[in-house]
Structures are given as structure tokens and as C-alpha cells.
Image (cartoon, rainbow, N blue to C red; front, side):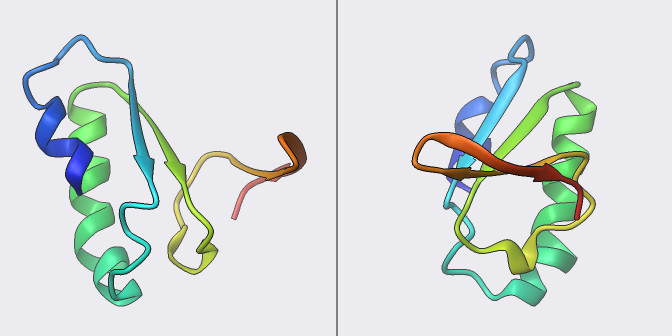
Length: 79
């Protein structure tokens, strides 16, 4: 995940944005390897993780999900 490498030296950072960084990855690996490590990282530093994606199949264990359409929130909920 390209953004994590750049943020390790920023402990005061509140938000972590991931913009389509996992779209080309195997979804099984995303769920079993990437997400646990990513969640561990954001929890350690008390960050808010914002994932921007077109692929909802790998999204799980998220507090909130927002679907945007033409710049507006079309749907909101949980997985």
C-alpha cells in the first residue's frame, strides 16, 4: 500500500487515505493479509482510514460506507 510507507514518520496524522491502492490485488490476500495489517497500523496511530474504491468485494469490517454518485452521497451504511 503506497500511502502507508509515506506516513510512518507522521504520528500526528489523523487521516489515512487509500485511493484505489488495492484494486489490482487478489481479493483473498487483501482480506487475509493487507486489511489486518492496515487496520493494525491505523489503530496503533489512532487514525481514521478512508478507502476510495470501485471494488466493494474486499470491503469488510468497516464502520461506515458511503456511496458517492455525481459528487453526492447516494447511500450510507455498513457492510
